[in-house]
Amino acid sequence: MKLSRKNGLRASAIGALVVSGALVLSACGSDNNTETPTKDGGTKTSAAASDIDCAGAKGQLLAAGSSAQKNAMDLWVKNFQAACEGVEINYQGIGSGGGITKFNQGQVAFAGSDSALKDEEVAESQKICKGGKGVNLPMVGGPIAIGYKLEGVDNLVLDASTIAKIFDNKITKWNDPAIAKLNPGAKLPDSTIQAFHRSDESGTTQNLGKYLSTAAAADWKHDPKSKSWPAQGGQAANGSSGVATAVKDAEGSIGYFELSYATSNKISTVSIATGAATPVAATSENASKAIAAAKVKGTGNDVALSLDYATKAEGAYPIVLVTYEIACDKGNKAETLPTLKAFLNYTVSEEGQKVLADAGYAPLPAEIAAKVRAIVPTLS
Image (cartoon, rainbow, N blue to C red; front, side, top):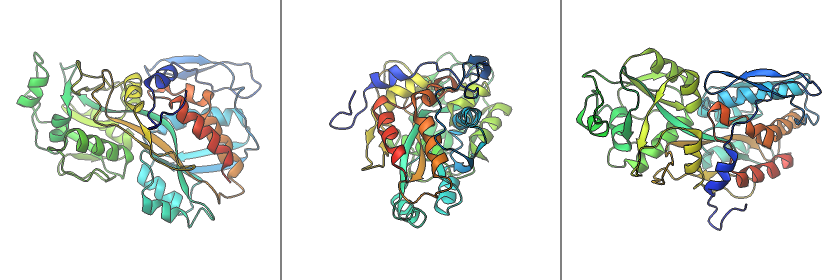
């Protein structure tokens, strides 16, 4: 498959990739099988990680950033370290903003971010990337789930307007008429909504803001580019894991986080009324249908994407993110460059992408994966 003239990504490319992949955790040369967790909380037996090319990787590699991709990163790190003796990958899920700050201060070899670098961040990266700059390498996609805990309500439906008003403290009761209209027959309690948001700078927050600004422009007047929570009210928690834990523990709560946090914590998720024939559930497959409409806006070795948050396509879940690894195209530190390239080569490989679906993520479209696979070996 090839990118269209408008760089649109065909849904079929994603659909072919969103399959249950083996979680490969054993060391190179080992015939032992390993049991690993799946998105439904069970375990899956996988074969040896014989396809991972360590390619001179050695020592420690530091990275930080997006907590939304942390569960995927944990899988990748475990697999890579099992295959590559003596290598340690240390990824801190401190949020996209914190990761980019550390990257532009030269503290980490790469940063994870749920949004592409801003122009000023690219300019700042040139101080660290001698003779080059930071580039956006998409590595994994997925839905931003709206998770909730509400006794007796198993299939909650919301639309962009109600989500905006809930998180903007304009809808404060679960039995509000706007929610009741979307959920006929549901036993909605006359109780206060506890809305949780991120306390740290987050690309997940930014992507949710972009969705609300696009799909509910009349109800969400905040800066869609902000990685900090822009609205008043609500309660804050650190990282996707912190928001998920808060929602899991509090009756009448609602929050947002990457789908893997909902599945691992057994948190119910909202289906979105988009204007399609039926509300759309937060699943990897449904997120893939939305990501399939992404367009490449980056140039050269930068593969930043533009997402369609206003999609009304049947079965397309609109609150999605594509999470990037931010690395120098030139000017990487010589001592960490072989490990950086080997690790990113693995994460974007067919083997690395296969593990994502079982963890609640959406593997990259074939065309985008191929583009990133061509770029990673050129990092210098």
